[in-house]
Amino acid sequence: MAFHGWPIEAVEFYEGLEADNSKVYWTEHKEVYDRQVKAPMEELLAELADEFGPGTLFRPYRDVRFSADKSPYKTTCAATIGSGYVSFSADGLSVGGGLYMPEPAELARYRAAVDKEKSGAQLADIVAALHAAGYATMAHEVLKTAPRGYPKDHPRIDLLRHKGIAMMKTWPVGRGWAPGRPRIEW
Picture 1 (tube, rainbow, N blue to C red):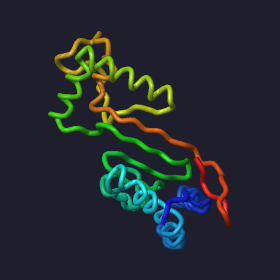
Picture 2: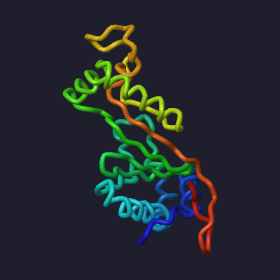
Picture 3: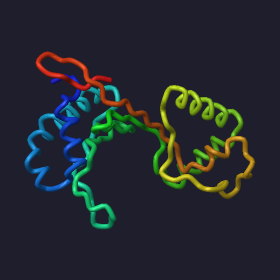
Picture 4: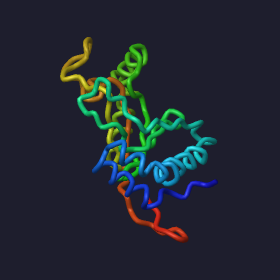
């Protein structure tokens, strides 16, 4: 089956879950989640698999054992696809990818590339172009000062302070049209 987007019921499901993140709400609306949220995400992952590799859907339940927030359910339907990330929520569709939470050797290679004049300047240009196109760049962690071994006045100190780099873009929910019912359109 081809991906045609999420029906408006998917947005309504997450709006309801945000208002009442309880087992009662989840149990009463699980069929809506399965048909209107999860199934379209699985269709999207299947459609993108040839180009980006297989997708893996995240579970909808939160691990609350060590969290101050004891809300039992995630308010997004998210998945990895190849080396990227896609999620759907009441706010819209988000995609991302990059070097997120790298191992120490990967982080060292990233910083060495940022430090070099040619590759560092190229990365800075790519980041600027992503920002101009509405993407946000981020890292799992950003240092408050220069990493060990790099001067505080380095021309690309902002990139060096990042422990990796990833991009993310979100498209807000819009109401589109599909035969028989409204659908989410980006």
